[in-house]
Image (cartoon, rainbow, N blue to C red; front, side, top):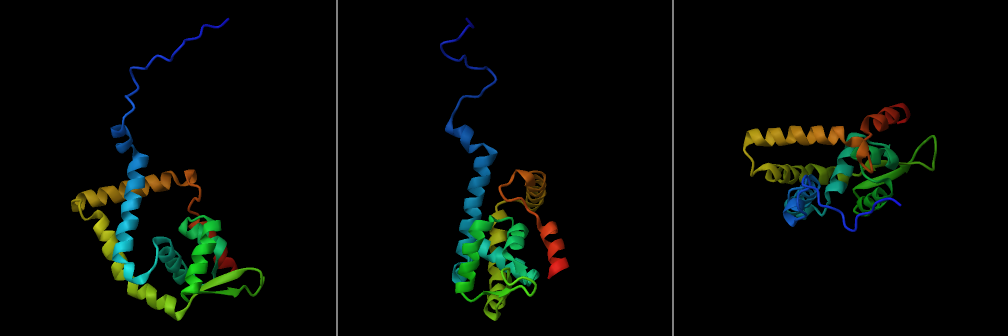
Length: 178
């Protein structure tokens, strides 16, 4: 019969389980910064009634008129099933219109409306203020360092995401068909 311990022996290498350990964990800090970033964005952009994802979708549609929802999902790295409701909200606000693709009427291509293009022009200063506020507490050199490290982490961990960024693949295909 194998030897069994009645209780596991604590390892000297393992730190004690404390809330301070949670507060210092990268995942916790990333989640908190995401909460803060969304809060600052919503505060700066409240007059426009757009979420960060709606803004990203408008930018991508503006940059790539005629993009379909699947490719839009890849370009902004957002879950395709959830993106449908984002597009519906933008359509309800008359910022986006869906037009059938000439080669396949089942595929709907996305285009900004005049209202969508106008709101995008108007919101950009507010978005820029929000982005600046997120980094404002840091010294300029630290801002640059943080942005470089975050870009590196996002790039190196892209495949670990539920929705990896696939902008190049999506846009390459868009160029062939649209």
